[in-house]
Image (cartoon, rainbow, N blue to C red):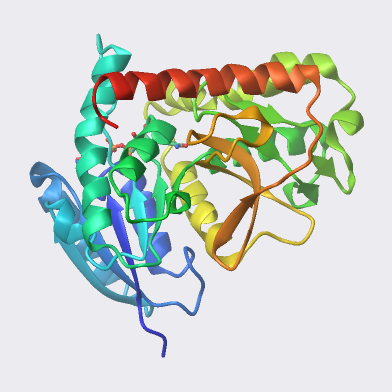
Length: 328
Ligand code: NAI
């Protein structure tokens, strides 16, 4: 039997945590033959709720789940971690300015970055889900100097999956026939879902749809504002779909993208496509052997250029703001 992989989940008692943990424990994160050991991190007030979730995990009798430990201390929670899912974050509350939000999250992601640096396994992979995800990932990464920068990623896979779903409906095609979808930039309303490089059954998606009005006025805003639409309809933010995207992100990172396809991940920029070096921005990436690579050589027309630049400008502003706050 294989040695278990240690997976740390922060915000384990939250709504994404509740949708995520059962899928990790049932083998969907890494593979149906990979045993997992869970380490859950919560704030002290939510430890009891996390214990309740752990009781339910026990009650599922998952053959792959080889243990659960619960912590309210980041240093212990990340000891030996191979996969860190940073879900817990400070949400924006009424009257909160962006600076306040970044500062509150800096107070979470700085110590978590330090704890990962101190105690995680050498092969640690980090996915930040908690918002503002890209900049939270940057903060954590900057406080983990001994961990290769490329191990810190942020989640735009939910946006990617939302784009697949919208395109599939419009084109009357199965999501399985769509390849090469890309989300560029920030996981925020400025993100740019790109159909010009996507394909439906091997044919260019933008050409196949052939409806620029829909692309500009429906597709892009629907994908970018889907989170708000879910809150409006459900009375709570996306949880199961966010958890499913987190599963997809890590599964793809570990197990690789299919030949001829790619995925969207927010990863540290090397300057590709004019994105300033060091920003954690969403790109088209391929993965193999547990490593990602930014897809090179795509032609970017003026329409796409303007949208990528706008979202990347927002990321630069967020980086500037956390620098000013002394968080990085
Ligand atoms: P939630 O409020 O239900 O749960 C968050 C949990 O995090 C709570 O149990 C809280 O006690 C915990 N927490 C807070 N500070 C913590 C800390 N320092 N250490 C450990 N745990 C801590 O929120 P939900 O719905 O589960 O969402 C979590 C985050 O994911 C939010 O920031 C949300 O905006 C973000 N999100 C990101 C998406 C993406 O696509 N990147 C999609 C959907 C949500």
